Length: 400
View 1: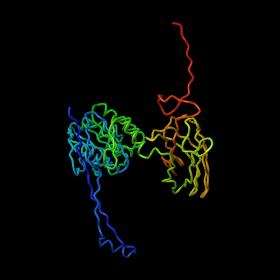
View 2: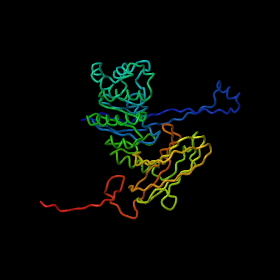
View 3: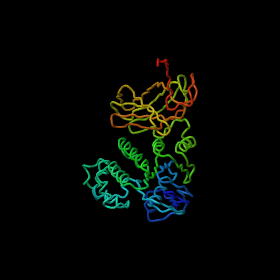
View 4: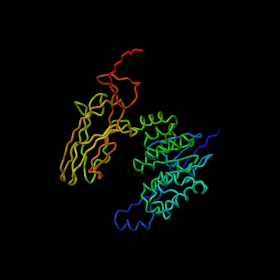
């Protein structure tokens, strides 16, 4: 059987213009509106010579850093933008979920947009009517079905868009990172539905930075780097190689967003039992010290520390056991000691400070920590899981 999708030497080239102005004063800046400075052009390849085939029923994850060309590839596959070179052979109907609201009309109601979007996907009216109730039930927007789409929140639009794309049974379902817009409950429903779609024999192409979801949903993965295929193969192997070579596996402190209007996080220290360290033996306790300053008066502030794997699988969350009342410029230090038995690997430390639903500070990659593969006791490398469990067994022979 021929592949359902063949991508043959696809390239996408953009021409970028750079215009320089030597104006410094306000008068000159205003006059520059009517003048043109020297213009230079630069050719930029978002994709360069991409080739691979997708078989019927395969689920392919597409991963890579921001700017690697993932979304551009999906837009070409969805015929939103043409390639500069190469061709695509498609032997099935494609449904795409790339951006919230794509294929919808803001003045039409949710009900009317279901039929509009279904028609764009090539569905007959009878087919849409047959799936209508399932689409509405899954989306959870029954009360707003006859409300114009322009009054929907982005999350409601996403719910409707995903439901239409998933339930109208295209042969190929193409989904971008847009699922990140939804709430946690709906994301879980989406993942479950995508698993059902894949198991039903249809083809899924899935772009996401949630590598755990890619590993769960996709048997294969394509890693893009600077518009080219770096690796393609089994999803677990491709993801592991991506994490090990992307620079994300280096232990460090990341201070890209340490200050907000509410809080300045002045320092983070990771320590073992004795000293500062970005690495621990697997049975060493983890000590985390935070120093922060209030930028305004804050009431009932909670501090939370979390840990995830590099693909953002949650490991644990701990919270300070008291609410803090802070005056402007108050400076605090908090220290927590966390015993653990984590398997060797690289982990991300997240820091959050909030009062109920009001978030004062959040950084999901505030620091990176390496757990080493040795300690005061040995563990078995063939055992699976994030936690090294110590267990005692009792074996007694029973009478027949």
